Length: 324
Image (cartoon, rainbow, N blue to C red):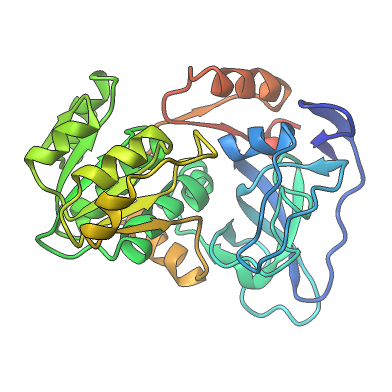
């Protein structure tokens, strides 16, 4: 099968022919019909180390097929699998056990086929485009969890969303669906119109402007300097959830944080397959809209170059099984 792999000494992907993956007991083989490109992939290519929620560093063993936003059709199941069956459309979403994170410590979705634990696959309804299901495993799910679980959003609450890229728009939409009054922040004013169409009450160019609406919850999809300002402007007893990784180091005003009894919370992905199941129900109901551009697998490195330069609106997706 054709695959895009990260090799020793490189920070790009090599397209090559490799063997189809084996299917152990409890796993399923998925024909990959959509796999999203993500900034996390760039961090991996650049050699950034990751720490799991289990307290251990990921070992990025090379060569490795990257791609953690995966959707497609089940074509084989291992012994003991009852949760999915051949021919079902599925996406890889929800909880990851140690050692089963595609594109991090097992081969991922930038290949024609990908073997995954069956318990981590969620069936995708026919009315959900497979490309939308793939990117939802990260850009929608991560934002959804940041707002609902990490942020604990409540109906009637005032929420600020910093950064109106693909994840930020999903977070904004999630907060609107949960009955919050939502304000967006992005230096790109062209994104304000889209955010307001998704239900934002208003949008601003700078984080400082949120002080006038006094949010009790702010979700920061950028990170770094924006987080410091978010802590300053959130209400006393408010919460700031950080999901953006634009800067590794954060500088926070301790007086603002402590004297205001404010909470600073990090959020990454989901620990619960049920979260992605809920996201899929929203997708089927038409509650989320993703801007998706499909590119050929042969152009995957060009796509990552565009992503690195900040030239991508929405999400990029390759279709390995459909372009073979």
